[in-house]
Length: 324
Image 1 (cartoon, rainbow, N blue to C red):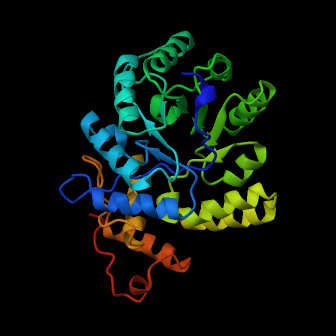
Image 2: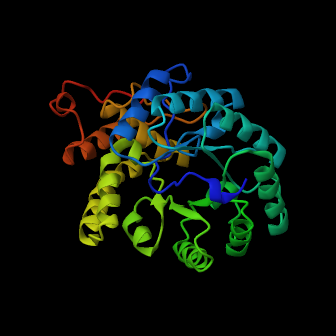
């Protein structure tokens, strides 16, 4: 589908976490509450079924179920982009069609997983998916998970041919992102460019990013909205100050030790979300290990220092307990 018909995904577009019940089922009540928290905090869109949403751990039916709740809770207040992430172009297109039928305004996917493909084959992959999904397609550049980076030439070829509408950049390659911003601008800005590098959002916006996809917004969305608003009005000192405050809170992800990347990052987010009363449980998708009590207590301490805990929790009425 032509990129020109895409909804305008700019500003703060959080990757929505997926709250789970202790038995591993989707906690739809908490998910509804989370979506309402994000939207009422002023975010500009929602990214469903991304890495923070633990999408890799769910079946296609569960993914559709999760998206249905996000779309329903969002109630059309902001656009929704959904991740269709799988092994092959055909499977991704099939899932993408289901996500669009469920209410996604756009679909985002990665380069092929597991297979070893050339840039030319990756190009064919994206073109096949775009042809098979009746919604704008975005490219998700996340080499830490896919083990290959989407090249500048590839992205711009796909953009100028109307194959992709935007890029969600989680590469951590700031030089590459600056080059992509410059090439995109020179081509007439066919792409919307969102950074997933949430601890340097101020710098990425100054460089020309169209917005941010911050996992930590599940914990503290208002800070990212304030940061975005400051950048829009050109108040870079205020943007930097807000970024530094967020980064102090982001220290929660460094508290778990000896766990996987998913357990450390998303686990810390969920522990903090539970502590703030946004979700009811901090359960991780199986087989991801839960955080231990020491890590949870440290996370609570960081939140308390920044006045991000409910009054009852700060005064000791709520126990950190376990992260399940």
